Amino acid sequence: MHQHDKRVLIAGASGVIGQAALSRFERDDWNIIALSRRAPRVSRPEKVTLLPLDLTDPRACATAVESLPAITHVVYCAVQESSDLKRGWRDPKQMQSNAQMLRNLVAPLLRAGSLAHISLFQGTKAYGAHLHPIPVPAREDQPRDPHPNFYWLQEDYIRDACAKQGTAFTIFRPQVVFGDVIGAAMNLIPVIGAYAALRQQEGLPFSFPGGPDYPLEAVDARLIADALLWASNAPTAAHEIFNITNGDLFTWRGIWPVLADCLGVDAGTPEPQALARWFPEKASAWKTLAHHRQLRCTDLGQLVGHSHHYADFCFGHGIEHAIPPALVSTIKLRQAGFQGCIDTRAMFRDAFASMRRLGYLP
Image (cartoon, rainbow, N blue to C red; front, top):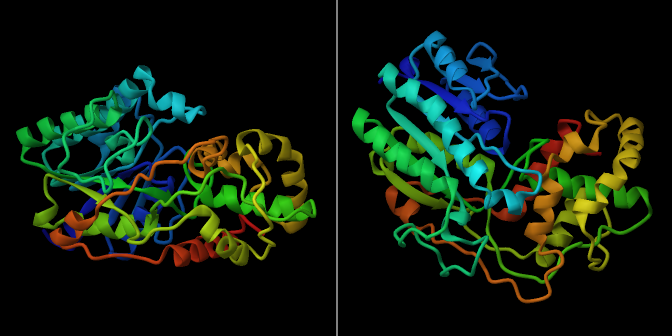
């Protein structure tokens, strides 16, 4: 397939992974259809077609696909999350909605007959990490964890539909994902940055607000984007599931001084704080700060999305007992040929620097 024949449709293009994927495929000179409610950042408008589309509407999806040029690749990173993340993860209606959104888009694309590859996302919830301790390290060839999850609904559909059409697919299971976007359900970068700025404005240190320490893994959205580009034409990626991480470990308390240094604030000593309650109380303070510092987003809710709830989950706020580690093996991905990695400290430095350049953080 010639380069000019490649056209990728990115669903959820303004999200943490979707924005990174769009930027990466732009650099590789692909033609891109970007689906998202909010407009993503675009550096090469001649290569990118923006298409707002309601994925819950099957008729709208079918009509949109009919109007598009031939799509050869799909990066599907759209997800519907509840403001109460943990409750939403167990909600059968939300599971069915996420499954239906994928079918609404992919079914007409497969019927069109030009689709060569689909990339899809799961996560450590595939191993039941939100429900119980998981084997360490969790591996892709483990038996499917027996709990309801939209991952299974999406995966079963993709396996069956792609087999009928002869289309390849790759499923990625990232660890905690970080990127330089706002308004996401699960992105800690704007939460941490805004928390630091607001505490500094109040004359308070940047104290770690969470609970017990535990080892965990991160993954830079840019690294995922590199893996998506690799998987788009790697024979070893076809019909496979891969864990993906930066390649190192960290703890929140251990990395907190690094974050403080990145943000130019005093780390202070740990101070438990429920950010899900704290952030809504700071809306007015952020508006004042943002106006004073001439930031692009004066609405704190628009900046952090639902990610302040996610922060409490990730930081272990309110947990008294030891938190079992949820670590995964990435040997399968490396053996398949993708060798990318990044120091998690560098990931944080780059992400905060980018958020500053974009005018979202002071």
